[in-house]
Amino acid sequence: MPPASPAAAAAYFRASLAFHADVSDVAGVLAAGGDPGFVVLDSRSAASWDQGHVPGAVHLPTALIPEQAERLLDKSVPVITYCWGPGCNGATRAALALAELGFQVKEMLGGFEYWVREGFEFETWQGRERPTADPLTAPVDAADCGC
Image (tube, rainbow, N blue to C red; front, side):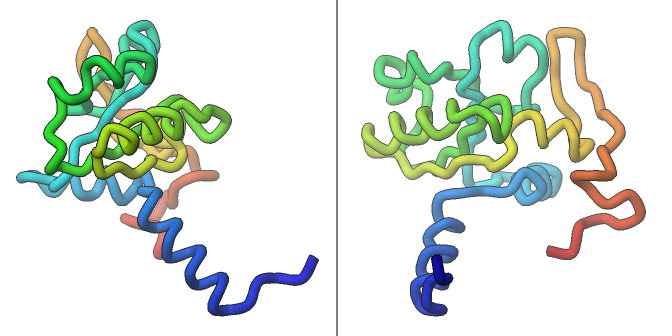
């Protein structure tokens, strides 16, 4: 199968950036403080949320989005969804449910797994934790990956 034309590839990758957010980019905006211009939504179960979640995230399991999203979220504020990780399509299902209700939405690539693996702080019912970054997912000697 030959690669797409440069114009088709550019259109595809431009569209991809409109639909996806990177864990590092989300963390960087949140760490800067102030109004990030979006809300982060954890679409996992209550038990998963209790294991750990992105600080400041809204907890709204995917199954509850149709009945609760309009009460909990502002349609004028973009939403970034996440679930467990790359092997889970829960964030995709949550993003679809929100988009069908008229919300602006992106999916956070890597989900909670990569949030933790990249060494970003997370919350549990016991407080906040900051894991050591996995050198396979985050640079060990630099502030960012340079991509």
